Image (cartoon, rainbow, N blue to C red):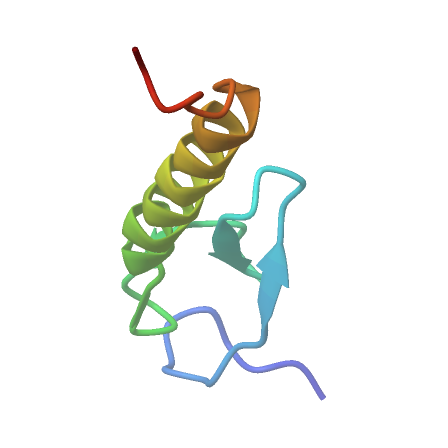
Length: 68
């Protein structure tokens, strides 16, 4: 039996291809009915992307040859 739309109920998050989470029932990142806020994932995703970029930059730099 489905819960009426005006009642609180726990929801299971779904992950979008960009890594963000949404409530499954309403497809919202911040949902007042499910009492969830998945916006914290944006910060986590941003930090992971920054780390990946730093690693890529380190790999692209040629090694030091010791100088003259």
